[in-house]
Length: 218
Image 1 (cartoon, rainbow, N blue to C red):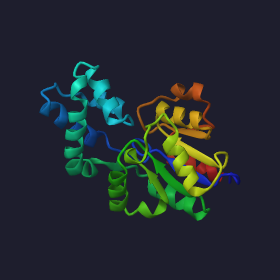
Image 2 (cartoon, rainbow, N blue to C red):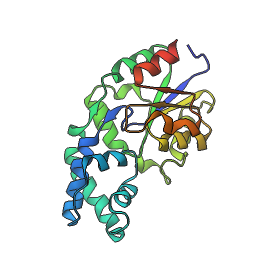
Image 3 (cartoon, rainbow, N blue to C red):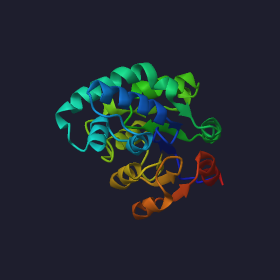
Image 4 (cartoon, helix red, strand yellow):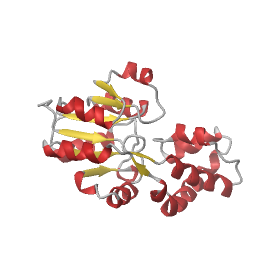
């Protein structure tokens, strides 16, 4: 086992769970309500992990910039009804959390998703108790790749950055860790390819959370 490791902070979307179909439902509900053409599934997948204003800008290319706030409101309205039920936790998550808790590694989540929604999903899956802290979109002034949320989580545990690890699926997560001075492991359960992480100097790149667990405990 890596004896210096005390804390693991996970990203949520595409790291612990696949919420792409929920995101597509909520995004296209908002776009249709604004009389903007719907987004393709492939385009929606590229926005996973972005803040809602960034998602709107990515999908509309600033053509409807003045409608961003209304997009956010409409997305949240639909997400309160449809996001949780359209989010699937990856099948390697439960065994990963159980294995890490057995060796007293403390765990948290840092995400651009709203904290209350993450808590709802984790509670439904009966795994909320594994996470001591969850930092969501409503808890920070600056979203990833600003490291504010990551620092908040590590401060909660009163551990050093060097004894912590951030795990995520995107280059946004990698940049967050790099800017925050926190070691990073990339997990390839999202849409980002392995080579995209090269310039961020991750300490490891794994295909899934089982490989992460094996690397930590090996």
